[in-house]
Image (tube, rainbow, N blue to C red):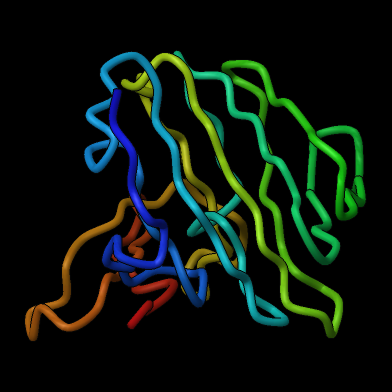
Length: 155
């Protein structure tokens, strides 16, 4: 058995105000787990994405998250849970004024190939992107795979 206090796990930079990776802290080997707090406008993910080999489940504890999906937008409110199958595209954003608190679980732990898409200002459309660390190492960057343009910076 492993037990951790969520607030003692260090938050990682990214598109969420708070992201605490619980997987390693719990010693989990067969799933991935993250605790999130989303301020208004924040997202769980760097972009609209799909994991080829991992299903994801989001449990919203407070607030409302709007998920962009292939079938349109879906609002998931406090006390609700949503599941995305491997290969299913989605991106959850806090479009409300209330802070969101949620848990995300992915299984298996390894997600397979990630296809993450963002609007590219150079290409003029949503393109596949990669995530890298900024040269100053203080932020993460998303870049268009097609042209190399920076599409986002996350401190």
